[in-house]
Image (cartoon, rainbow, N blue to C red; front, top):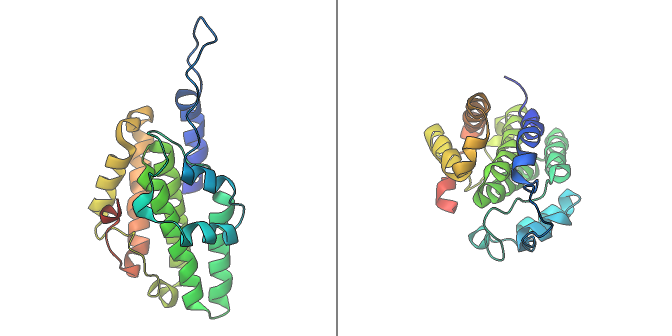
Length: 206
């Protein structure tokens, strides 16, 4: 299976023009762009895991849509969440399994933030974060995995696919069937990697 990190470039190639480009018109008059939502504005300033921790530790997922607008796309924060995986690995090598598990937990919470906004681009980035969390957990082994406590894990693989379908919504039609099938496979693989962590259902968090 191809690495999931290829998904976002693929999404960018296939969706940027359709999701972001203005439709040509005969005039220069366009509706004003909506203001940046509270969550997106906060994430724009995140440059490292320390700032991401500040955001996640004081962020209530129940209020995820406060100040946002329909169809809002959250900024790309890969610099921070990739560093979570690196930090988890370093901590595990030092025997600090609880701290390493905490980094994984932060990744899963961030993935839930992206997922909860819905829309294909948000969902894809959320799944990419979860995928890296799963790969990192698998690599670090059960000593770390059994200490990951997250309410953002579905109990069954089928629940993952239902959530994916619901959250992507009508934007699913903007990608090819092969892309969607690959995304579903990645989501299921991520679920099995994280299954050893236990936890509750992501659906309950929406």
